[in-house]
Length: 387
Image (cartoon, rainbow, N blue to C red; front, side):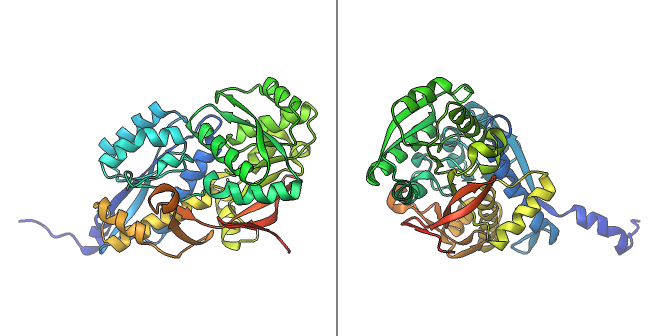
């Protein structure tokens, strides 16, 4: 005859029976791009912390503890494919935050699309989104969205004519160089000097020397990882370049300042994805700093919001296992109240599918190592901040 255990003794068993929702994080955690990879991972982890603190994610009457499983792709396509295979075949994930780089994003797409795995990629390449990739979403703005309105403002306010830029010699660098070249031309200036290099390179002096000698007015940093951008700034100033240094695209100011120093970065004009006056983002940055003991990278709020949008889609779909239903609900989200502001999916005119987030962004000047907003932007225009 079986003995019945008192109900109080069953409570630990019930707690252990709570199901787990696994979310993969396929990001760069080592090397020059680590600050961005950590931004993606930490955004997902902080979103998971929020739902877990409430007893788990409530989907279809069940509560799921969210577990984020990170893999380091080292910014390499081969490592990304290996990690994606493990996440799908061994960890059984249906959702991945990342990949971070364009080349890794393109490399894993055939695998994730075939297995109906939803990815939230940072990859800036236009090829990352298309009707043939219905499970690929991008919760961050890219150069394609931000470059033209930002560059129009920069060209007008800095009176730029000739701009030089260094780019990594890979899919990301090639795509961003094309975006910038077109944007500067449309704004009445030219990207007159372009240099490409392998990502491992640290000595930019020969490339910068040739570029500066061509008579450029400014140096554009977009397309470079935070650490590499810092090296470019430091070496350019050491060579005596006194013109403006600008950065459209990925946020990296704290990391650039750490590498180049405050004097070298003073007066830089950078594209910012977050408004320092936004209280929700400020609170998030404080959480980030307290948990991870480092300053928040500007990409992180986008992936915190993106992960929460994914959770909302699961709740609307009533399932965590049917990724096709979740995908449809994710596509249908309108006017999502993220910490960055009101968020919507767009991009069909450019990519053939509305899987590109649309959110506000800013042009900031670096003063004493910190960003000060100079213009407020959307995908159509930037207006000088009157405050």
